[in-house]
Image 1 (cartoon, rainbow, N blue to C red):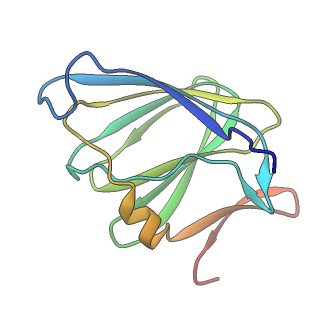
Image 2: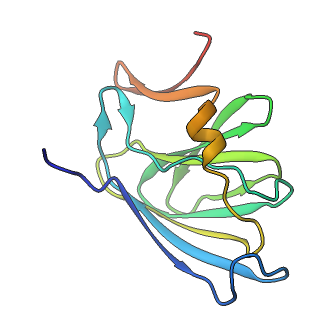
Length: 143
């Protein structure tokens, strides 16, 4: 069985995780591709401290920032070179590559935010991001 690296992250963390008052920075590269009709994407997460925010800045490529509030309401923002995205408090987030080339973006988040991947593993997002007839489409779980 062949394994494919879907994405990779490099982070700069100048203080121990959980330290209040500092910022962490990271770069992420999401490769192009799909599993079935679902685009390659990052693992989604909330922050452990739900009131923490985050910023993503797109370097190059084409993608989608998928955002979900705690009620499961899900929306997306298009990402392309030069776009800047604010991830509000109490919002889960993940990124999908919808292009033919690697999607590259930078992230900045508070050093005490933490990551809660488990709630997304357990409950998922309120919508999936799929290629529907060649168009990137947010398909709500109820559809």
